[in-house]
Image (cartoon, rainbow, N blue to C red; front, side, top):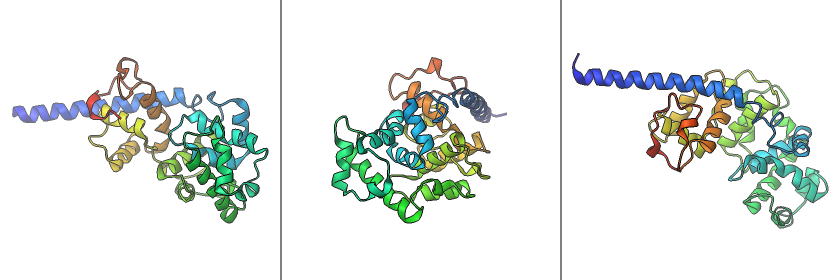
Amino acid sequence: MPQNNLSLNNHIDKKKNSFELIREDILSYYNILSNEHSITKGTFLEEHAKRFILENPNSFLFALIAEQSVKTEVAWSLPYKLKERLGHFDIYKIADYSEEEFEVFFKTKPALHRYPGTISKYILSACKTLIEKYNGSANNIWKYPSTANEIIARLNEFKGISQKKATLGAMLLIRDFMIEVEDKNNVDIAFDVHVKRVFLRSGLVNKDDLNEFINIGRILNPEYPGVLTSPFWNIGRNWCRPTNPNCSECPIRRGCLKKINSFTK
């Protein structure tokens, strides 16, 4: 066999072996992490904030909207803190506020969000959409027999919820709130900067291309790709950091190709 063909085969074998090791380790890490990162079972939320999310479907939607450039605990505590400032959580009353009036509740120090003006406008808009289309309750977005694709499409209609957030929302509803759908295979990984960094550095993908990310996610866990969002995100945040990554303790270190310079954001 010519030397160049031998080298190519060795490269392919190494890549295949790397992929299989990463798949094995990321699924194992998900099993370890699933309860820790769960809204309903995890410990990152204080009990009163967690209970509020569980008892108020609209608070789930508001928290999902707030999932933007802040820590998870900040986003998912926001609905409870907003209720405390408002003195109620009646979306019909909220919908009557002007943008300027409602923004004050977000901007008053300590601000409820890194971007109080933007998020307050998104949430005010969400209240109006809920009233117009869902009888005032976000529960009606996912209550009736729905497919994952339908839930994602409905969530994506709200201002401030991108395809990424809509996919994340569907994953959380299925994983943490036991919403049953038959097409979990349509819930893809929600890719943000942390997840992309892990995919590129580990060698799972060769370029920063969303379609390639999605396709690899579907191969890693065909039955339910989206459930791998949390483990990959946690690796990106805690080990595969933009600078000084901690490769020696990373949960997928066995298969990672350690392309450290390929993605530094």
